[in-house]
Image 1 (cartoon, rainbow, N blue to C red):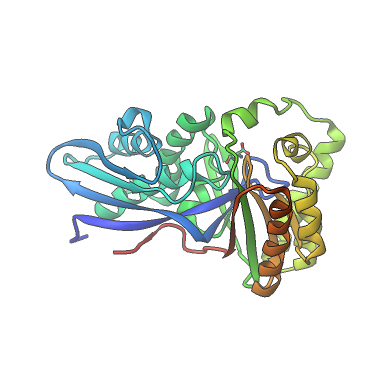
Image 2: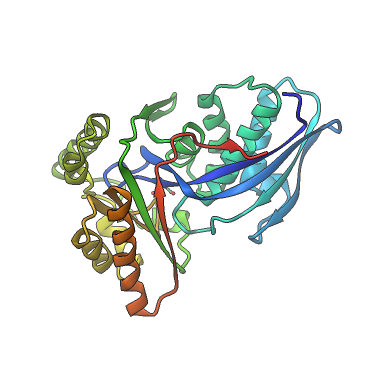
Length: 309
Ligand code: HSE
């Protein structure tokens, strides 16, 4: 690449997608961060600017920083990088704030070096950021941020990522109530074992959801957006969750659940008009509760991180 500096869009992501805890994710178009990545002669990695959130600039304490360090350790590049982060995705919102920064850093550095690493390798580096953020190197947000569309993380060791077809008419509604839930906290409340009966229901839904996406079978997608394991536990942390979900389904959503570790709630719908109606119906619940929120309607972002300039 002849450019020494690029500005990129780093999409927000919905992890889990109801039945696929830690394995399924999708990328959004309507919300994301921006980052400027610069190639500089002085060796090392520096975060020079963070706008929008109060986050540490020391690379060892920053998710973009640790992901970038993992990249540089594996790279033969002898120069340095500078990173500016413009956060639009709020921390602890459940739509992949840390993933956008970690994935954006390594994607941008790779682009400036003419892509020596594969997408899979970039996900591996970005997982170092997720480990810092939540204590667990899960890949279900960073994989869709880097690959775009829907992804399935079949395994993290060795890392095996399967891109999944995104049906053309599928749209996401997201509603982010203004409370913060740390992923590390919402993981601590989960049980470490599940019953065989719940396992059977859950993997039935994961397989069916993947088939529904490839076949563009919207009814099957809707039937499969069910979480028997995590949602019953985590939903108690989200005010109004049951009512928001019911209103989304009443308004015509195919399915509705917790986005990532919450508190954002997502719904998937067929067609933009339905998704817009669903977002409105979900919003009305928080208006009634006097809880402030951000609503989003988004197509599925099939490209992932992209250069803006
Ligand atoms: N799969 C992770 C979790 C995603 O639900 O804890 C966090 O965004």
